[in-house]
Length: 232
Image (cartoon, rainbow, N blue to C red; front, side, top):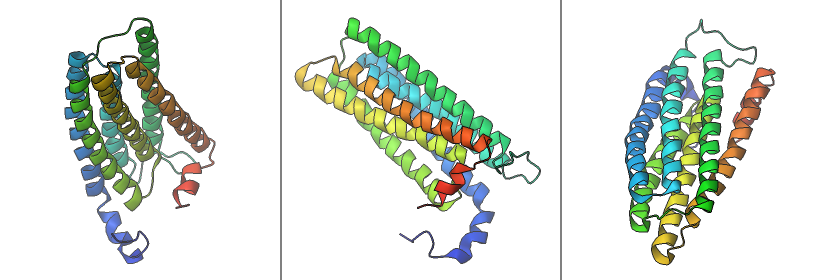
């Protein structure tokens, strides 16, 4: 693997391929996530799992996040695009704010549903949950790798970071769903499903608060993303 700073003379060449790369790196994850979100939504109904439903919810919010991130990356490259004084295009800021809000809605739904399930436990099919969640984990790993490549080889943008956060949330959700499936299959202990759903939602809440803080910093002209984008 080539170190990121080994070929500085390729920077200009890479710049000309930004649009193509953005297209590739957002379109493939978009299609993968959209397809599997449907599989997980049906699977959550079939297995009765909140962990799987919460993962499907994150995936559907990803579909919007990745689609908008791709659109923003295309629009923000236009020279006449309106920009905030910090240098970030207003399109990207808008998309990042939308992503943060959609994450908050998904988190709120899962927390409320988890509390309901503590009071009235649902029967969950452990084996079906484990199989679907494992496939979801594989899909999310592929997508995370694609977006990590995007962040590493191009300037890290606010909306790329937001899209990556969505996928990290999915990844954690898939891991939680796999663990819940295995525990339920071998022990029959149903509360593990809402417990893990709750933990993942709280962790995602921390990520989302950090994203919102970055958005506010950018709006205040601190351009915090540029500073920690170059600290690797």
